[in-house]
Image (cartoon, rainbow, N blue to C red):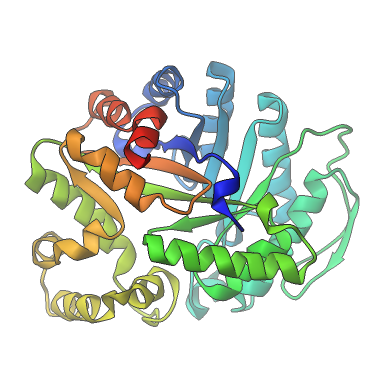
Length: 350
């Protein structure tokens, strides 16, 4: 899968966790279009609902929109998920991408949603059923975790809705190559991106597909502020929130497993030990090494952002500037977008 075959697209990731109202999210999206961004992305699971946000953006702009990602197993059945995605596909005129992930990890999670602790099988069933429904088929399917018989969206001439799979480990990456239109990475170093592309290509080849037709995308998180200490703290809170092992989850799975495989197992084990002895997360951010945070994102003044972003984006077909802010409101969000427009990133990476 040769990333040199296509020009990297650059989108922006926005959501209500920035402290923005729905009206502000819509206004910022219009500013993103004026600045030259090529897509708008939001995560699912909050309020306003991600499908409604994407629908609003489709009314307000001519940009592609996408959800990265819908926690499918936690919140949806395949038919309900396909219905929502098809609706936004219609509203947008075919400018919508559905990203799906498991929504959790470990036996306790899968038990809580009434599914077997077989994440690859669960995602295979979700991806195959959802894609077939979105393609207008009547689906009869009996899978390992899910089944559906005689189901259809009953809507002729649906616009295409690509389905991307969120993938961290080799099995899920191969599954994305076999069954999806694209793969959504997260918190990956440049080295990990290259490794992931190769594994996705293996899955595509195994299914007789052309790997160049799959899109490899990723959020790249940035916190742009002249107050470097505050930017580091805000970025670090989010990074450790993902990378540290959650109680009851083995250190080899989910994001903890990803960061461990990227060389941070020892650092995270030390931080987890301190946490378990009562050290609060805010102090752990101060203790964590800069190398951990700088390997997967950027924090600091605007002038340093483009070069760092271009380095972090190597090997991707599409990136999303996922904005973290120190200050609330739309102003710091727009400032971050202005520092990392597609044109500026392209120039920095030239």
